[in-house]
Length: 278
Image (cartoon, rainbow, N blue to C red; front, side, top):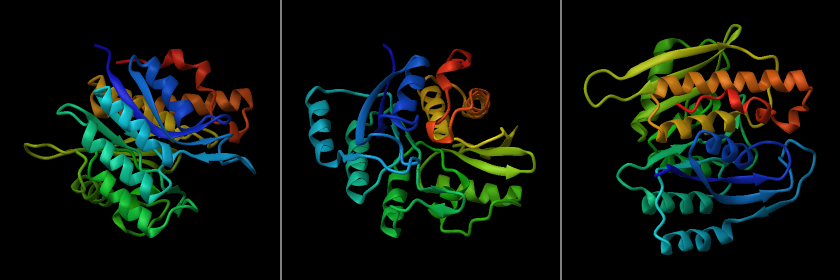
């Protein structure tokens, strides 16, 4: 049967990010993407103003109907969660819908460039650590990794031993696979890939790619979508990280080519055909 992933995230009507990025990419990669919305935005928050409908009050009834139908999922992928209550609902969802072979990916969307997003509090950070404990895979950027571990952030100059210690610390929270993204190394952006081994030493390596010319909204969602679909399709983690990073770079280059405003995300639709399913 076709694999299925429950995708827990918000929906933005304009400006490619979150659900509107995850659904088409996961679907293209041959996996049925089943949305569980956390909130609905008229457009992403990079714009000067937006309408937002918080879906928290309806999430539990939505989930209850899935339970009545006896639905099961091969994967669960979570993104930005804006309240303690939302995180509690998602933790309960993972416990109730995770079968023996269900893979759980948590993208701990908390901040970037050394700063937490404005809605994030110390209490939310604590709750998110508990969510990470239920995951198999996490995809934090460098800022998020530092906040999850409670260590000082710096943009550059990370030694391999420091990155290994960081990845081991994150893995000790629960996930067996960790990728720390957005590590600046000269002209390159690096991802630190860590896979816990039940026997012997863990697999750990730095995967680098030359930086694209500009940053864009939604690229973390593109990355997480590829990782989630590959995970349930059985693609090796290291191979998946390389593929996801390369595709994100291609998407940014396409945005530059089309002169896409940074608020509008990346025009991944133009090059989706280049993304390999396996």
